[in-house]
Amino acid sequence: MQYPLITVITPSYNSGSYIFETIHSVLEQTYPAIQYIITDDASKEFPADIIKEVLTCENRGNIVAWTVLHHVKNVGTVKNLNGALHHADGEYIFIIAADDAYDNVDVLSQWVKEFQNTHALAITSYWKNCDVNLCDCQCIFPNPSDAHIIRTYTPERLYQLITELHFQKKPLPIDGGGAIAYSRECIDRYNLFDETYKLMEDYPTIATLLKDNVKIYLWGGCSIKHRYGGVSHNSIPNPKLVLDFIKFKEQILFNNNTINKKMFFYYYIKYYLYRACASLYDILYRCYYSHICQSHGSKINSSILKCIGKIYDFYRKI
Image (tube, rainbow, N blue to C red; front, side):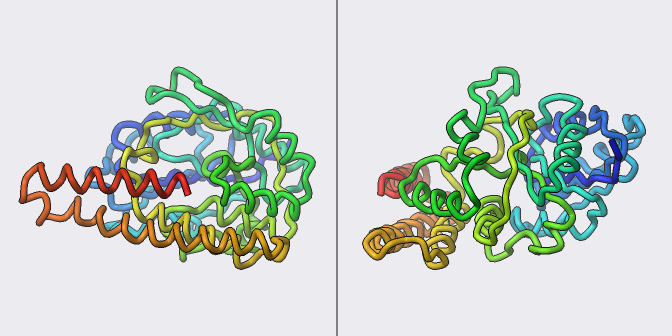
């Protein structure tokens, strides 16, 4: 097996102490040629000096280069990742969030081997959904049925299925985030990631690849342990993410020639209902976190919070 330079990127935003678990899971990897980039998106407290000390003192020699980036102003997940990609020199690009961890020490070695065996542009993997301490594995994705779909469906058929499932509010068979990795050729060809989105980098990229008839391979190993209840999960979803989901619906609806007229009209109506809900949700969310509402005590905040909850519930049920 050859060991080309690979790049691991950890995007961070208010990750707290979780980021050190992520860093250690990268440092423990057996792969011998890793460029590690940590890029923070204007966290309130980002321990850059401590992180640099850890990377210097605990490096086992497998991290051949590292960079710690810190944005003074919040730019969103997508621009944060694209900024890191400008520094990436690896043949393969892996992304792991600052509140997740690799499943075992051989993840990167086995993943790179899969790239070399398949010559794939993108490879997804299995991943574990764990508790907040990354101890109890609650379930593993994709399930056997979804794994079969990823392996056997053509890109065109998988793209059509993703369109249908997304508008039906059903789980998609293929996931993104830290569970998918890209080759340098893929990055250069498609200029990842789409900055018209703020927080969602994975689904738009997956849709773009599938629509261009790119096969996304499924590696049989488990890549990450995802911290359910970490920074990416919140009882009040960020409206920017909700708006990103609306934009994604627009992307797969108006750029899809496989939808028949009857289903297109049905999805078209749902799309505008989604947009209306998302806009109202965004306004109330801003009110809830504004200084004006905070100064009027808990009663008005409680009322706004209830409205936000009802709108979001309605949005999820459409």
